[in-house]
Image 1: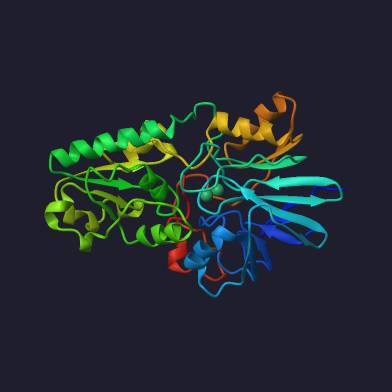
Image 2: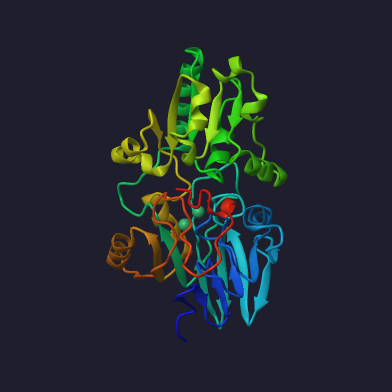
Length: 352
Ligand SMILES: [Zn+2]
Ligand SMILES: [Zn+2]
């Protein structure tokens, strides 16, 4: 048997199942790992995703999309391929896709992290013959501090600003990162104010059963209280007129890329907090080993380094060339001649 999953111009394609995984061009049947814009695009005739992703996908791609939700671990058979979805620990609803056919098991990871996150189900290692892994932070320099240390740093920064009567603006991707940050904030310091791009996603998380501290909009907050507030906003709000209403403020950006000094300088913020929803190098290695896979296929990120390393440790490794976001660039790249994604979908495409 040839490869169960191959790359076509539309996206990753399961050959016996005749469906696509996170395709970047419109197709008939798409199985979606998670609702970030570079993985979940507009225009497919049928979507299959985790039950917890359905609400988010509808809010981003339109209420009228044709979508079927599958509980984690539940199995369905499509053209003889047994499909099941397993938590990827990346954002609410994120799933790895397990495909079994003719005694072979392949797993496509989508984006994942292995550190527990209070806002989504923890990553589950799924045994397989072939594992298709992301490699966003696939260099040995990427090692994350425990998230509690990062939350403590953020709360310390916020408390100092509040004591000095300065608003704290924290930029983070509106879907996933913002809610994970919320789960780690200390609401006793002051009010938590959310930008209009963040608040609707908080609602989806709460509806999905995720406990988040109380949040409010700027319009609901007294001017005097804003000086003690932590404001969560998408990166696109940075340097925009929207920030002027806060007067004197300190700002920060939360992303895995903040490990790189140059990335923080480019963002032009006061502080960078290193927090990623992707696995770091040890996390990627731990996840790959836990699958028991002999063949590993590397997608978006540090492909050559990961492939070389995996071959050196005796695995059969190669790459798939995909159109998933490599960095925290935010726009969905629309292909000429194809329908444009609605603006909500183009917002905050990626998430690192
Ligand atoms: Zn993602
Ligand atoms: Zn991705």
